[in-house]
Image 1 (cartoon, one colour):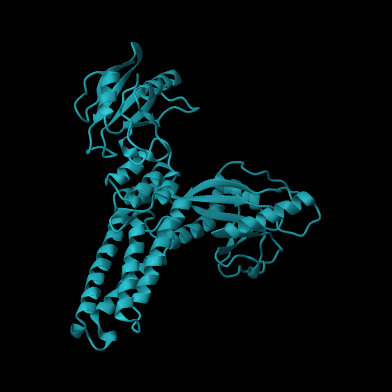
Image 2 (cartoon, rainbow, N blue to C red; image 1 turned 45 degrees about the vertical axis):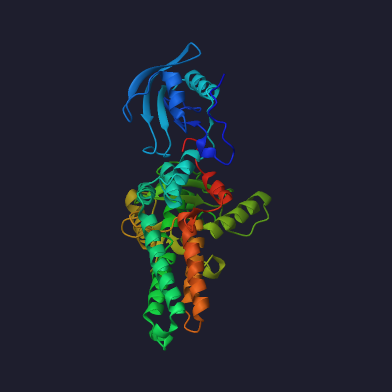
Length: 453
């Protein structure tokens, strides 16, 4: 019979015992698989599997067994709450990575009253138990998925509370401003007759400007999502050759026949620690060929998604009309086959050859300049917004601050705008008035997590 340890109502999910693989398992067999378990009475489950509880946070080699059957020899780490990742009683089982071992231990845990964890449930419990705020929880997911050194630095900085401290500072300033606004409303005789000279109003305006400076930067989102660099141009301009040269492998077919590339080819590429997506597209031209026409359509779709457009121009071709391309993207004319070009290049244009690594230097230098401009000198080292949710919450808070700084606004309305700004700022860290944001919002966020986090 399973232990009666998960009989709590659905409204108290953190009291249930959950388990999941934190590593190992899956199609790729690994020598070690780490099983995480957390919840009230988790210690009872561990005792049933491995005997007396080991010393907290010290690895202990134990024989795991259930109903008289030996399951594995494993390292066991017991972490009683609140000094654990989730804030609950937790333990880890470092198992041999065989699927039979993992399945056997999972079945034993289920038989003892635990249940498989949902995506992100361990981190969600850590959030509910005050071990971290929502900004840090999101960064855990980003850290697990980091593919570049800049992404790693940015996520780790957010896990350590960089953006949280910035958010808390703004909330503290707004709270103090709100308290002073309410005091001025209660004691209007102590308020400056000339509202424009009111120091409180100037402080609101200064806070608004500070937040606007953070909203003006998109470096965090660019680092998290990566830059999309699209190679475009007429057929046979050298796009596929450039893709292969940058990737340092034969990723795309190269042939002297115009229209060889029919569909977009994308690959991941890292420059200066920043993740990018390189996209080779079909040559842009009018055509009656149905397959090529579809390729041109897809190329134009990629151009709409581009952060940077490298438009390749072959010898004796002219630069395109820029009005045909998205204004938001950085447009760089690239004159390919530099050994065949004659005359001076237009401003901001680059000439290159893919025949040697030296021939790519002008382009790589230009892309490094763009990364420096978009992401700063040390990408990932500065606390910044990293998700659309962050930008939305901060934008709404900024709008209310702007209203609160309006000199013509009545004091009661100014106070209400400041209260609304503070509420929106609370959404950034996941709390409104000290309470967690509605559960359905948290469910959406944590659905992005892997099961073992």
